[in-house]
Image 1 (cartoon, rainbow, N blue to C red):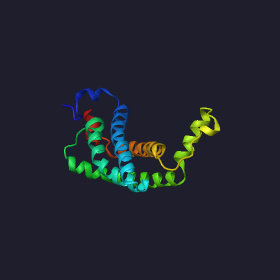
Image 2 (tube, rainbow, N blue to C red):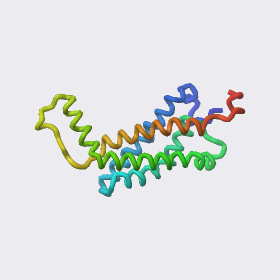
Image 3 (spheres, rainbow, N blue to C red):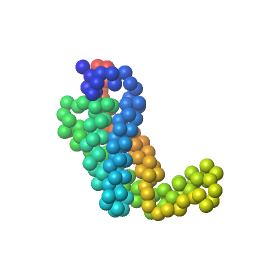
Image 4 (cartoon, rainbow, N blue to C red):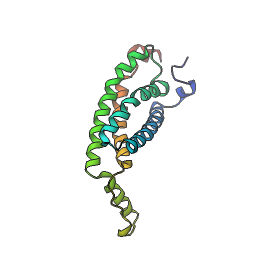
Amino acid sequence: MSKLIHPIFEKVPLVIRFVLSGVVGNGCFMVAYNATYRVLQMDASIVFAIVQFFCIILNHFLNVSLVFGYPENYTKSLLANMPVGLSSLAMGAFLASYLEKSGFDTDVHNFMHTLLKKEEEDIVDEEGGSFYTSIAVMLATGIYNFIVLNIINKPADKEKKEL
């Protein structure tokens, strides 16, 4: 019997399942982050930390359902994975704050206009917005999570021999 949400996922390579889990989890995160950022009008790092904290549980559920398999003890598994989520939260909050303060979104926006050969007067130099910051933070924390979660959730030697 499959420990994943559906036996068909057993046929999908682990990397593809991780990407699928990440896309769904990060999609939920980005919607929640950008909506919360617009509503609260707070520093990006604070908004990131609040939303990411609540997404740790969702992301763990997605990872055990789609990637690693449902553990015998869900609570123990969640608690073992929680430090990864919290360290990812800290890394993301720091990176979001840094990128926001450095004008990353404006720089990327202007670069995209230059790349597309837009006229100088078409280049927008606005304050605010955090779309590109969200993408950069999502990529950085996603790579970090992929590496660390694969180390933490690798099957025990006993499970490897049975496979």
